[in-house]
Length: 379
Image (cartoon, rainbow, N blue to C red; front, side):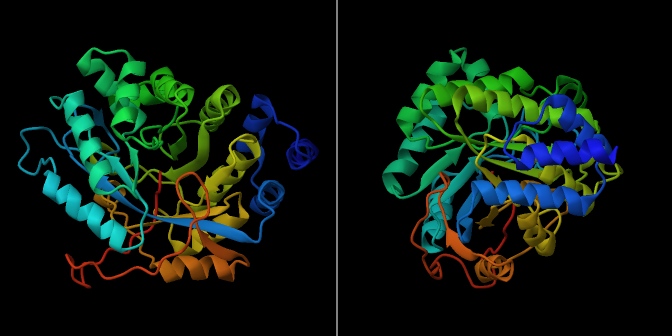
């Protein structure tokens, strides 16, 4: 067994592509975390020999919590008639983006639920307005399940939907709603949400239009180890076809609603899975340390388990926090984590281009007590 594992790890560190069967073997039988981390780190250092590791400053703006889908793991969504259902006003959106600019951010992660009645024109108008008023902000907006929902309720071709959103100001696509890209899992966890091929097709068409996106995985629930590898394999195959993914981010499920009593996986499995992702996803250039579910120290350790990016100073995060998990880091703590690990901290944008670092200023619209300092899942 050890000989087989060593052969697979050597193959990956030598720059050769490992097969699906070899990925399954690693997921099933490689429990030596040190050995796995050493191999993943070697691959990362080959891809990213530079003396720095990166981070981003952005804000997760959930423009609505109303959602037509039902996801067992989600504690954030509401139905239209719930007392705490909302759709943000344009003034509220402007305030959030204004604060983001003042804090040194260059992007908003704009996502919501799959609202059952908002039409495509609503989203086009939103994008155009934000683009005109905040031209320096990249609109990293609408997860693939949201885009698929727009396509279905508007009865328009998927390409038309994406072309119109791009023309209105859509800058890039986040990788939300990926969960596990295996229909057995998706059908059991969710109702009314894009299935595997639909999630992939949104990204495929977006990439064909010249767009870039991130990809994600939320694991540690009902999936098998082989299904995690199947998820990786679908991402790798689409990346072979289009080359449009900039980064991969994975995180562990935080129980919510019907899954409140489900056991969660811990840091060992998080680091192990991320390391295997780095070995398998040989054509996706960046892996983000997504430590909002594990804490800052594990986020730092993840830089030695395949990650080359510390994620975002996420000025606002609601979805994971709704499930009861909140870890905080300030911008200086993110930078210090990178320095302590032996690299220079450098700020980047969603396309992983280095940008000039800005010292955040105090927004005039929020008090110091309410200044958000969340960092975490930057999709």
